[in-house]
Image (cartoon, rainbow, N blue to C red; front, top):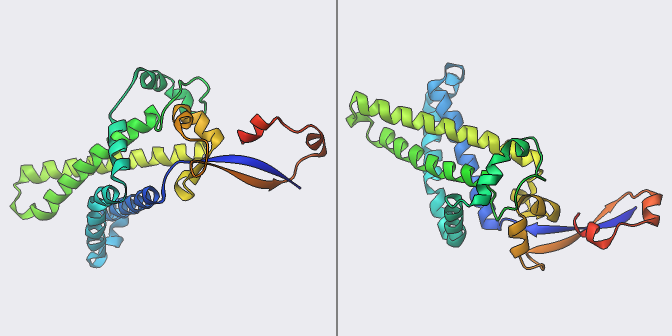
Length: 240
């Protein structure tokens, strides 16, 4: 056995990760309990009114998540919103190469900052969906008795389509998380230097090369005898 040093880059602080998982949990509860109210195969979950109670509790959590984010990390929330709606020429070039990115290829893409062009679109649509889901949901919850047929129909369609859009965004988010092995970003807060260089090279270059932004971790692993005799250069070792 031998040790290999890998470098990890701080991607998300603890508060950001907490907000992410609270938002994810609230969305999944909303999605499942919402389906139980409109989709017959899941109607058994609505028995006794429990799904309605859970739906409303999750709705409150969902509504307050951005408030919690602002209290924990206002600058992080501000930067996320700004970056999500700011696009450059390099972003447009990146989007042209999206089919290759979808299949796990990145070498043809231009350098990107803290969030890449695909993530910008994902975040922008998520932010828009948050407001349409929340607005239509509040109308259905608080104004259902006073809505006319047309108002009720518009609010319902808006709510359902917005939830469907966020569900599609979530599936895509999960897909790319596993294709690019990005889950550690939301479990430990760190990503490998290799991942950061591949996905966000401009952002990586802007970080101080020292803890807590960049840390080195020794990993115990089996290394063939031939490689022990001819170790890789230090720069390759650092790339992890």
